Image (cartoon, rainbow, N blue to C red; front, side, top):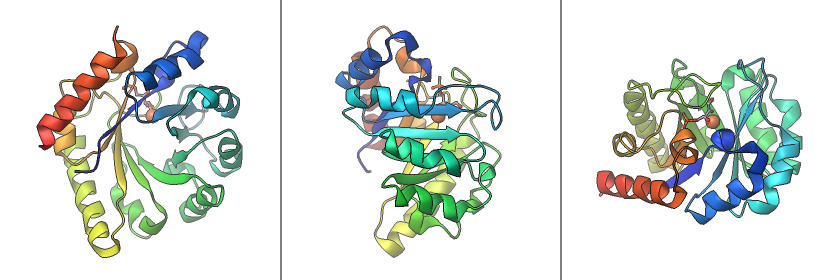
Length: 227
Ligand SMILES: O=C(CO)[C@@H](O)[C@H](O)COP(=O)(O)O
Ligand SMILES: [Fe+2]
């Protein structure tokens, strides 16, 4: 399996000490910083934008993984690229022109990804895989941290991994598979076995007293499940 990556969602961090939180979670073994952008339109919550991305960039010695839950998508993409985003993912329902949005993200020098809500079919991938660096499967309905993992997403992850493996056999290119929502120490092994290589976790990491301990335990579980 590709090297597993843990992506703490800073939605559950202490916003009053965000730079320090980013620094600490990276020192504890985080491989990406997951940055949730909500617009109170596409999802019923309002979070952070490019200014905050720019503010944490000096602390982020690993890639910033921007998860856009905004509609429309395109006009905010250049601002996030300028603010230091390394990966930008968006929901296909939030873009009128999916291929164009993927191209726009790449044009601005970022890796691009599509995000699938629990009930969104994977068919949106059919004609755009050449422009996709990562697929993000939501294992909760987007909008809030701290929700419970939807078990049916394990089958969806397996189906998605099969598509991405078939693509790899044709193209030689690995596309990352990320999961987001309700990831905990007691389900991360099953999620890894289903073919996921990038794991977003917000409340499980920032709600733990020892970030290094929980990230280390998560990596050990992944290793055990995929050995
Ligand atoms: O995108 C989202 C929610 O919409 C996530 O990134 C959450 O922030 C994950 O939080 P936990 O479920 O791990 O607490
Ligand atoms: Fe997210």
